[in-house]
Length: 112
Length: 111
Image 1 (cartoon, rainbow over the protein chains, first blue to last red):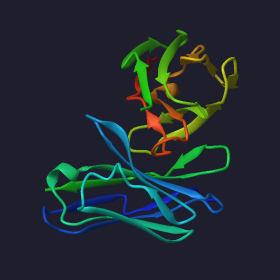
Image 2: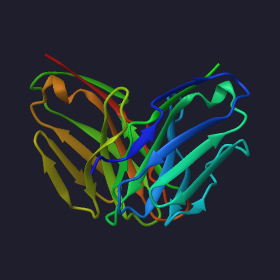
Image 3: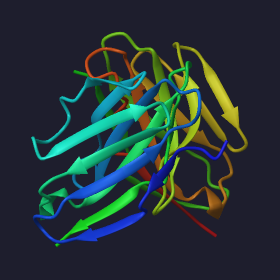
Image 4: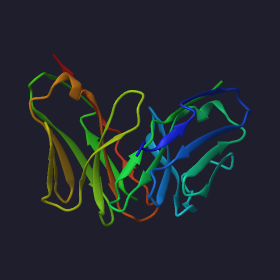
């Protein structure tokens, strides 16, 4: 298995623009998580899905953030409109039945 | 609310100098405690899962142990390639169901 795949790896955009991050989880994993990592706050859970259904989005900063999982092999995290404070590394992770989460390489987002 | 505290924040060792990293946690019903290694510009890489107090796991120069309040990651005779940030996380299954991470220990092994 190729592991968790994320795209793009780097994204630079201007404030106010829409940003879409993509994730392909490991096949067979029923859970998918989106995290954000910054120097100040470390790794923070944003939202997670179980069998493609969003279970808890309490970590999503505000209504500008939305996430979807249309099928078992694809998820998106969208920010609209983006702001400079959204600059961070965004990770996607999928989890197996032993509660072990495997992370993708991340998307480094810079909003200017 | 689950809480994880790692210490020290940073640690610099000479090659071959053994040491331990600490992870203290507070959870309501631990389902698992996880150790990850993160290299610059990469996602966290899974190392170990510990499920109950008294459990130990080993992998090369690393050994993880677990008590009811904390976990230790022991590094024996480290090499420069062990330099990384080591993250501890807990999974309780309550609340958000995601992992609750500590801030990590930035480990530097000098040759």
